Image (tube, rainbow, N blue to C red; front, side, top):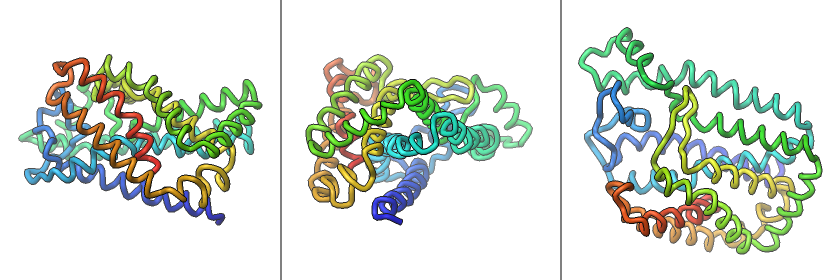
Length: 310
């Protein structure tokens, strides 16, 4: 394996461990809501299937950190690999491959894994946790819970958008390579520009819907404030990946690797700025002042991007 490929492989392993830790720690958050009825909104059991009596604030900080940066990084990594893959396979084959690698797992997870995995959430919320009662309660829900796999359909849709743009104009890869080269030469300016783009895509939606509101459409879950943010980060990765993994911003001796300590400090600083501003909107976002909502929303994208670089 090349050094960049080895680094990405190691990153993938670390992300898998973080994802497992994140979902394991949700049961022990000091801020986790008390269990409510399975068949009555708000359906908090989808995010907190099991809530333990033992809590620790440290898990809240860890999960908040990952909520800021983890999903954004996963969309970025998908974009990072999309450019070279499109150039190698072409739009049609690329879409078919994404349907197989992302679409089928999403269908399997929604139809099979989620009903199995969420049974404990039902069992701890009812005095008679029979399978028959569970299926009746499941089919009486106003949507089909898809669990932690909610992001797969969005990832598939954005990959489809990239393929459509490539089919319409294959020259887009050249333009994205130029963008990747520019980012490599101007990392701080790239961070500022990308933060600005993400602020424009995130802040209006966060203020309109709050950072915490979700919509469920059948098995398709959507956090209303983040779709444009994920699209921006996917195509940010698309540009860097099109330029090449073995050179530029993400190379093993590139600007990020050379200045890893500075980027890590930036990640901590921007995270705690966001956390402090977001605390001003608790316990109820809707009743918080508009100034606090705007400040917290503006702080999120820079923390999101810096957290991914660390």
